[in-house]
Image (cartoon, rainbow, N blue to C red; front, side, top):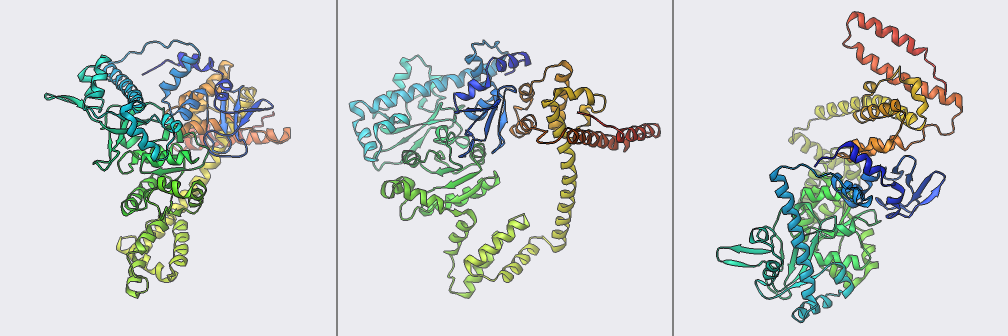
Length: 588
C-alpha cells in the first residue's frame, strides 16, 4: 500500500511525539528535552530522550531513535502502514482509499476475515471453559497451578467433545465453508465438516501485535498427540512467530527466555519472568531467531532437560548464533522443564539458575564430554580432537584464543597440544598457515581502510549535525559542499533532504527519518545524526576551526575522487580549487 508524502507528513505533524510516547513511557523534563527509562532495553538510569522541537526520540544507551511513526513500529512491532493507520486514527484523519489489484484486495480481505474468525473462536473456547461442559478442563488448569486471572490473561479455553461444535457456531455467524476451510480450525471435504480441535484445553496463539493467529490444543489425559497445533494459514506462519512474544517484547529484562512449551511460558510469567517465549511445536527456525533479534541480543535457552531437550538446544544454538544472538543454556536438573522447576523450586531458585546458565560452547562440550571416558588417555585424546574441531570454527582469532584458554583450563588439556591439533585440523580443511596469514593481512588492510573511512564519515556526520542544530551555517557552506560529496549512502540521503529543507527555510529532522523506515539500522544512524550536540564546551574559535576542518575534509576527499578520472583540463581546475580550499576559513 502507498501513501503520498503529503499524507505521511500530515499524519506525523498531527501526532505530537511527546503526547504519543508519554502514553507508553514515564517522562521527566530536563530543559527542552524529556527523559525516561528506555522501553527498548533494560536500564536503571534514564537514557531515553524525547525532543519535542525536533519531534524525535533517541536512546543514548541502545541508540534506537526515530520519529513518532518509527516509535510505533519499534514498540508495537507495526509495519509502516500499520503505524501510519494507527496514528491517523488517533488524530481522526481519514486516510485515502488505496488502489489495490483484485488479487491483493482478495488476499487482504481473506486475512482480515480469518483473523476475525480466530478472534471469535478464541472467545468461544474461553466461554466453553466456564460452562458445565468445561468443568473438567477448568479443574485440569487449576491442578496445573493456574488461577482464574492467569486463565483470563492468556485467553485459555476449552473445545467441546463434539466434533462439529465450533463449526456450527461459525456457520451461524454467516461464514462460508470456503473461508472456514482456510482458517485451519476445521476439516471440510465432500464427506462433511467438523472441528479440528475437540475435547482439549485451548491455548490461543497471538502474534506480536496480540492478534489471534492460531491455536494449540492439549489433551487432558494420556491421548496422542499431546499437543495439536493449527496448521499454517495466510495469517499463521509457525516459523516466524513465538508464543508469548506479544507480552515478552515489553519486558525490561535484557534477555529473553526461550522455552519449548506453552505451559512453561505461562508458569514463568506467573513467577515474574515476563521475558519468556516458546516455539510453536517445531524446532527453532531462522525466522524465529531473526524475530528474537528484533527484541534482544541475549537468549537463555530453557529447553527440557531430557535427551530430546538437549538435542533441541544443540540445534537451536547455531541458528541463534547465526542471527547474532549471544546464547546461554539453563540447567534445570533434576526437573524436566521450567513448569516443574517453578512448582518445586520457586522463582528465586530459577533466577539463580539463570545467573549460572552455561555459555553455549561449554554446554555443547560438556554434552560431548559425557561420550568419553576422560580417565582413558585414548578417549581423552578423542575428546580433545572433538574440542579442537569446535574451536577452529571460531573465525575471529581473539575469540578463538579466549575459548581455547578457557577450554584447556576447564578440561585439563595441554594448551600447546590442543593448538597443534587445531593446526592439523586447519590444514585438513585447507586452512593453511599461508592462507591464515593472508587473511590476517587482508583484515589488517581492511581495518586501515575502515579507519580512514571512519574519519571521513565522522566529518560527514558532524557536518550534518552542525547544520541541523545551527541552520544559519548552511549559507556559509552551500557554495562549497554538495550532497554528492558525501560518501556514505545514509549521510548522502540525509544531506539531500536536509539541504532541500535548508533552502526552503524549514528544518524538520522527523520528516527526513520517513525516508529510512524500511531499514532500522539506517534509521538509527540518521536519528543519531539529528540527536547529537556538535558543539560541546568548545570556545567560539575552536568551534570555527572544527567546523572549517570538517568542511575541508569532505570537500578535499570529493576533489581527490574526481581527480582520478578527470581530463587534463578538469584536473587543472581541481588543483586550483584544492589550493583555494586550503585558505578557507569559516567563522561561527
